[in-house]
Amino acid sequence: MSHRVWINTLAITVAIVSLAVHAADRRPTIRVLATGGTISGSQASATSYGYKSGVFDINALLKTVPDLDRLAVVTAEQVANIGSQDMNDEIWLKLGKRVNEVLSSPEIDGVLITHGTDTIEETSYFLDLVVKSEKPVVIVGAMRPATALSADGPSNIYNGMAVATDPGARGKGTLVYLNDEVHYARNVVKTDTTSLQSIKSVNRGPAGRVQTGKIFWFAPPDHKTGKESEFSINGLTQLPRVDIIYAHANMSVDLIQAAVKNGARGVVIAGEGDGDMTAAALDELAKAAKNGVAVVRSTRVAQGIVLRNSGEVDDDKLGFVASGELNPAKSRVLLQLALTKTTDPVRIQKMFEVY
Image 1 (spheres, rainbow, N blue to C red):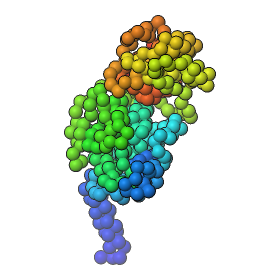
Image 2: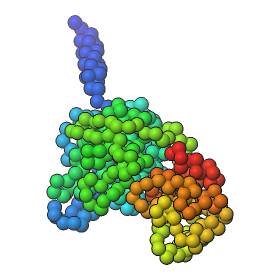
Image 3: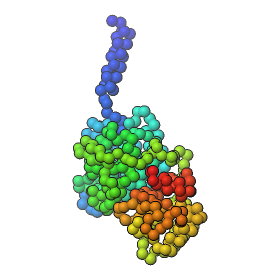
Image 4: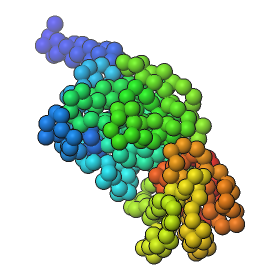
């Protein structure tokens, strides 16, 4: 055999072996997008209460998760590194656009996002409305920082990755995973300040459960998600301002007036009971609605539904929107996106019913 023939034969053999190895490696490819949060936080000591979010970058965090490479081919990038209490519209737009960009690649099978739990319910719902892909998007967080005793971050990343690689996660919109449970973004809320079991879907229950990487799915989603939605963040550099105002006994109208004066295009009321408020606040919001400000009635109560024209409020007459199942934080997210399309309360009400 000549030297040239031998080299060609060797090259062909290497190519065949490479193709065989690639075919044998059926692991999905998951891109991890990190935003910081408690999951990447550090304490002064393992038993102290205080800590700083976003100390560790994503590559350091992933090294703490055993056997992650058995689930997927993992690549990662740092989109932000903040405590989620500092999450803002700018980062939402950056993250949403990056998720859409990543998922548009045929080489990527899904996205896992690390995030703080304080605003995980808002970010997940925003992505649920704007991500235009059927591929899985899973957000994970932690209630304990990375340096804590029995830190929950590594197990949440592992099981969150298992969800992101599961075929059953396709087409379910953005999902949130913490502490053995999977939740639909529309339903999930944080219910406790420090408990590991703080993330819940209070009205409907979880979308599924996870046991050592095995997923058991429950009811499918029944509302439109990003690919079906009319919302797009392409070309958007900012979102309309929407303020949340908390209703209480002896509530003043000052904060409503200040919100409108300072440029709020929408106001969400965290109402008493099924969206009630003082008569003075109701009158002030009616004036705002007549002047083109979108007004949504939600509730400060942990569970339940704010129905249209419920209680003592005539939404039809006043031009208000009823939030349905959406709490004030989620109502704000949807109203911000709704206002990129319309200011008509009738159209906005329909959005609250289908999203």
